[in-house]
Structures are given as structure tokens and as C-alpha cells.
Image (cartoon, rainbow, N blue to C red):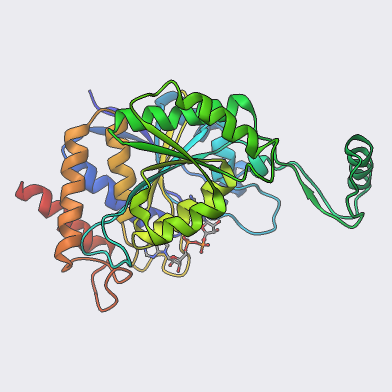
Length: 357
Ligand code: NAI
């Protein structure tokens, strides 16, 4: 029986890297029936929204999706398809492994960090009060009345909720991930010394959860201390769990430690569904030119194959990709600036590596 998986090609370089993923997954020997659905600005005219309900329904039905990047147009009133998907499917955990591969230029070698980012709370909930609006002034008055603290009247305000339930489930997710993947340590990160009732709660709850996992060591670190330590000694870190905003920033920082966004995979996981995608965006500057590095979507595909139980195929694809990167003869120009190799040729080389096994 083939696995039925939703496929969202996306736009920009999306269709190019997704094509590479489809070919490599097939070459790894996994039978998949793709349920192809479109999202993004290209479907707005037809469906009136960049995320039509049938796209969300398809993921709900199949439980798993592989997604290409989707452009978020600035200032047209549409929320990001990515944010919308995470909310409607309650994909509360964003997992971003950042691992060094031989052949990928980077300041560090042997980095192997997994960032687990809470995806549904924090400053990303989108509850904001625009500067100068009547309800903002009203809100400012209420806050002053309740807290006795003054907010300047010409302020814009964003709300940062962090809950016990949200923190508990993301911390448990991080520890369960550590146990399942034989990782040694989970570091919980926040700014608990300053934001005592949001980040402080995150610290308390994650520490509480850690007691249920005696085989995994636990440490707590403030976000500023983590920033210094991670660039001085990335090997100190293993699994890092964080609220939404810090997770967003630190996962890009970690991608930078191992060679950049072109090679960073990610998974957005909920209780019932999981969406796998590259960390990078639609890269309009190189779209349609056969220049996109497929590594990030291929590593996301490796995560997806492990998620659906196709571990051997996942290992096979990762080995073939790692060998291609290490040889360096068939890699895109973001990895090796003198290279004339494009997405298609790099994919051919990875498929050929798999056939050699
Ligand atoms: P971007 O990640 O698309 O591009 C940043 C830079 O990295 C560009 O110079 C690009 O050429 C390069 N790059 C990205 N992926 C690459 C790859 N696979 N191979 C080689 N070079 C690569 O970020 P940007 O320009 O900020 O965003 C473009 C659009 O993508 C925006 O509309 C943004 O909202 C959207 N976006 C979508 C995401 C998603 O669908 N998950 C995630 C991030 C951004």
C-alpha cells in the first residue's frame, strides 16, 4: 500500500526543490501517492484565499504533508500561509535539526543541534494594538488601572501569552524527541529573569516536566547567555526548547552555524498532523533558474520518511545526500560559488549515489 501524502509545491523555487524531493524519495524506494494541492498567492484569484479549505482538509485526511515555500506578499492583508497552517492544524512543535555535513562550508564542524520551537503562543499569537487607535488607548488605560504602571500613549502593543498547557506540551515533546532519538540533553531557554510571568512560567513548567525524564539531562539557560555560548561552543548544545520568538531567531542562527538556510530542514508537528518543509523561503531572486539548493527540502523529506516509519529509506537518502555534499562535484553554487551545477544535476547525482548502494 502506498503512503498517501499531501504535496504543496509552493511558489518561487518551491516547485523546483519539490520535484527534486519527489525524485529522491522515489529513488529511495518509497511508494507514495501524492495528493497535490496548491496554496499561495497564485490561487487567490480562484479561491479568494491563499490557503483554500481543501488544502487544510487534505492534510487533515492524510496526516502528513511535504510543502514547498510559499511567498507571503507584504501589505495585502493576507496572513502568512505558513502561520495559518500551523494555527488551523495546531502544529504546535517546530523541529529544526541543524547538523554539519562535510563539504558544506561553515565556520564550525560537528555541530548537531535540534531546535524545538513552540509554534502557537508568545508574541506570534497576533494580538496587537496599533499605535494611536482608540482601542489601544483604552487598553493602555486598563493596563494602567490593573498594574499601576504607565505605558506611553503613543505606543503600539503586542501581547505575549505563554501558558502552562502550551509549555508543558512543547517541553514534553522535546524530552520525548530526546528519548526517541537517543539525545543526551535538553536545554530550556527563555528570559525568565525579566519576564517573570511568561518566560518565568516557561522555565518553571519545563523544569517540572524534566523530572519525568531522568535519563535525559536538563539545563536552563537565559536567551542572552545562550547566544554567546552557542557561537563560542555549539557542541555544548543538543536539544534546545524555546518559546516561539526565541525559537524563530535561534533556529536561523543554528542554520547559520552549519552553512546557511539552503541546508536547514524543518517539521511542524501536531497531535494529528505533520507538515515538513525547508526553513528557507521562496527565493524569488533565483526562482525558475535551476539554481536552488535542494538540500533543505531533502533533509525535510528524510525527517518525513522517519515520521512515517520508512527509516531505512530515510537513512539511504541522507547517506546519498551526505556523500554528494562531501564529494562536492555536484553541488549548487550557494555551497560552491564556482559551481555550474543546478538543482536538477545535483538531484541526478544524489539519485545516482542511492543506486550505487
Ligand atoms: P528566502 O529564504 O526565500 O531567501 C533568502 C536568500 O537565501 C536569497 O538570497 C535566496 O536566493 C537564498 N536561498 C533561499 N533558499 C535557497 C536555496 N534553496 N538555494 C539557494 N539559495 C537559497 O527568504 P526571503 O527572501 O526573505 O523570502 C522570500 C519569500 O519567501 C517571502 O515572501 C517570505 O515570506 C517567504 N517565506 C516562506 C517560507 C515558507 O514558505 N516556509 C519561509 C520563509 C520565507
